Length: 193
Figure 1: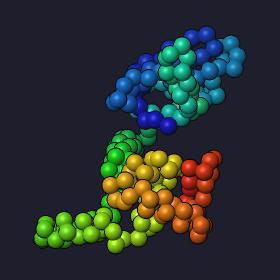
Figure 2: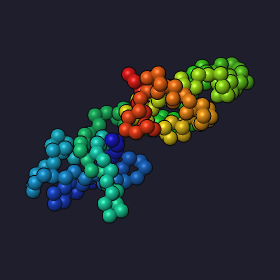
Figure 3: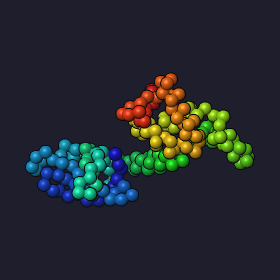
Figure 4: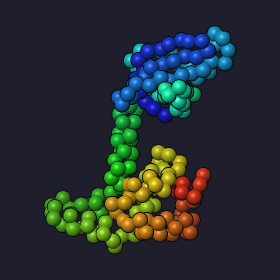
């Protein structure tokens, strides 16, 4: 799913193409028709308006080295608040992916004494905290936006908080007590509800 601004609409034989931009680049979103002069099902409830923001559902396809999104649904954003929310979610997910989650002690930092804040963060990162709980908190945060999370993605986000052996042991602990489970392969996980 992407949230983007619709720039243009092109009608071609057996398909409708929208040019959209999400601020990172321009994309083509293609909706295929089942028959000649037939409106694709995904477009029956959508009316094209240039330069409006939409939510597009679909999958990325590559054909002749050109990427395009094959759309399954498109809908106009009812409120600019949803656009703002989408940008904030994207930013937070990016920061978690690059820097990892904040620990509880980092969140509860003493506002009056910066030196004690640094000491408390060092204690949390250096040890003392429950590594399995740190991994579980990260997994819960990641699975808010996607159903599954891969071991390599988790490690990228958490490597500044613990060693690889601690991380692997924490995953094994969570698997053995049933808190998490594997999904499509042995390195892809989801959290037990």
